[in-house]
Image (tube, rainbow, N blue to C red; front, side, top):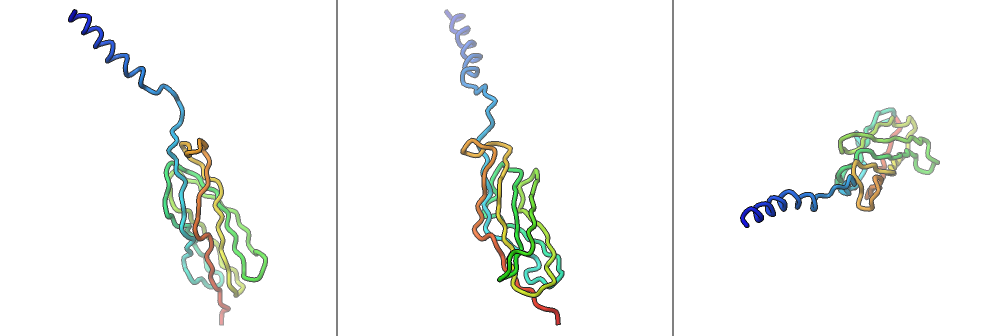
Length: 149
């Protein structure tokens, strides 16, 4: 009798993990897209010809994403966009996207607008897709370029 109990206990110790282990190769669904609060430029009051670094500041960094596509447009107030530059960020680490541009040599008020596109993740987003989208509260920054005296 003891031998049967010992055999049954041994069988249960070996068999139970096999029954309750997920043998699937399904990827995890734990990716979280980032959310952004604003676009910040440095220097904040650029002059004509200055090189400016723009950063899209995180509200929340998200999780398990590695590539984000975005597009920015620099336009002068009252004019059609003068500069249309597409840019993308790609990194194996989650970080705030930055890019640089040169301030035009024309005085006026300018708006730099950023639109965030597709986010790619190393696992799946809750909807089951490896692609998602990010939100950004304030996707533009305005600055004035004064004429040199």
